[in-house]
Each structure stands twice: as structure tokens, then as C-alpha cells.
View (cartoon, one colour):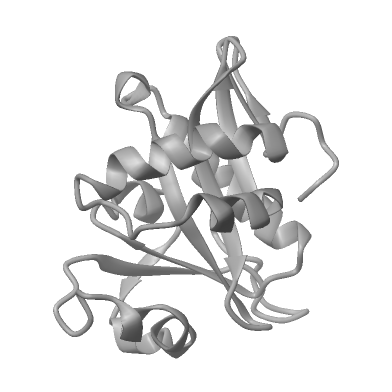
Length: 176
């Protein structure tokens, strides 16, 4: 992730790259939401191995949200494991994490970002479009075929184009 200390901050919330000590808090957030059917399971070891791909939102030094930018191919990365703690919802933290992951995708020169979500509104507000799942074969080949919900997924697939080429638009996501 980027070397910036805080990618997004307000007087109460800061969004920054995760580090190894954050892995346990990320795991706790993920587990709480897997149980509700909002996320696919992730092992603690998987989160530890991939913690450098995460951003965390902190309030008063405590992790209250997270999101990962996972490369699926040379042209597509996925926003995954996007979670905000129950007591911190409604404060724009999820939107801030998404916007920060978009900025990170641009920094990494990723042409497209995708996500699978039950709540597409924050993504659409930042420039993502809802698309058929079949438009994301990289995701289907990487994760979907092994999922118990394969072929009956209740999530929306969303995509944003970050770089349409040298002469085209760089995406329409806005910063918050």
C-alpha cells in the first residue's frame, strides 16, 4: 500500500494501511460479519498473510473498519472484506474506505476495480456500476466456483473503470 500515513482522516476517523498488529482486529470484524452472511469466511492466517493489502479505519486508536484491495488479474482488483464495526456504522467510514481503496487502485495503475456486495449504494455513489456477475470471469474463476452460493449468489457485482487508456477518462469516482 501507499506510504502515506493517513489516506483519509477527519477529526475522529483515520484510514491508513494496515500492519501486522491490525490483523487480529481485522479478523474479529470479518468473523462478526461472516456470521451474519455478509462476508465469505477468511482464515486468520489468510488475513495475516495478506494484511498489507488492507486499509483500516481507526477511531481513538481502535480499528473500526477495514477493506482489502486484492489483485485478481493484471487488469482487475477486487475490493473485499469491507467491514465497519456495528457501533461505527452510519458515519461514512465504509464510504471513506471505498474511496481510499479507489485511490490506492489508481496509484497501483489498476484499470478496473470490482466488488461483490449486498449493499451497492455506497459503491454506485462513488462511480461503480452494477454489472452481471459473468462480466467478472476473474472473480468467478478465483473464488465463486468454490462458494456455497455459486449460481445463486444474492450479492450485486459492481465495477469501476479507473483507467480507460492514456487518452480516455480516469474514472468518475470522487473523493470525499
